Image 1 (cartoon, rainbow, N blue to C red):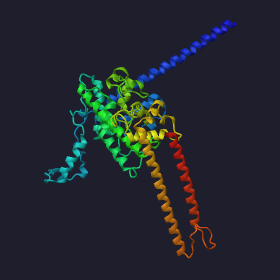
Image 2: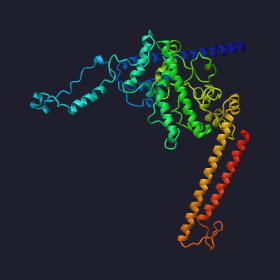
Image 3: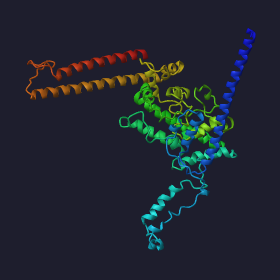
Image 4: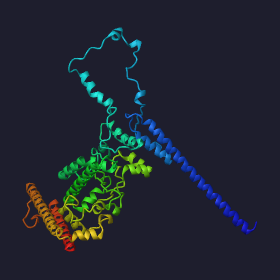
Length: 470
């Protein structure tokens, strides 16, 4: 065979291999689509009863099976209850009596009317709501939904609310839980921060959910009211973040909230819509109307519906860091109205103090050059920054003096204890008159001088930072 024929044969063989690979990919894609369609139809069948629970666990198992990751057993994370349609269920009449264990007298007994105020009546009253928490015909959606929407879209929304109503919760309690969550501070050491955090979270998480879901509303007035509730939530977030920065400083606040597991109890949403001017500069995903997602991007729509009542999942795609949030919402702009659009003056001054100090921090902690230079050189913020710096230096000095006083009292107490033990001490810088081996008092004195030296070094570090800020 000639070289020319060999080359042609090799090219032909390569084309056949590529075509075979494409056929395999097409087959895998078709199989994935078929599995997804099958599970969607199966999901509608098994979710026919509102009292079925934990069906989202089956969704996770199905997703793992479709993705073929081999971890389906791990995805089954708890028990699942599947009930048939209520029309196919019969009323419970109790267990069928067995003739060997049922006496004739018991068979002929007529149930007596319970006395007034008896326990059986109270138990019936308390148990009945649990057996049917969602009555038929009860409106589930808590906001005025637009009219004329497709039945599938409305059914998906009602499914979200029905799922949480079955366990006597609100959707925002499930999407933004508070109980058993990890705080990024000690509530005993910082009770003011805890109180502000609790108020912000419980007063605003309904607005968090409504804005993140962004379902189509009935009238323009309803949309205006939703924007107002979102604006109030943003305002409360600025108040809370200002309190945190005023309490700990900017970098210390970021260090706390970015520690592993600490960032859940912060609202990372609140982006504007994708048609606004502000959204053009976002590095995160702007808010999109849920019905438009239903029309144009079914995958994103299904993901949002599926994650709506998973804890802290509905805001995925929002802001990822505090600095990004503050910069892109102009909360570091000192020219805006305090708390309404930006942080407080004191919080901005603490931010400027940290930005102009000697600290090695991650790059994403520092805003863009224009933002931080404008903030640090602002005529109103700079005097506040100087005043806070002086107050912090005095507070550190006062704490150092108090520590030295405590150390002196401890040394005096140690000396009295030695005198009681028969060891006579002199008055010259702790030296002893008799040849007694150096004890804890001598080592304690040396330790005190060492801490004093460290304190002096800290003051020098602050002076260096002050020089940079000046």
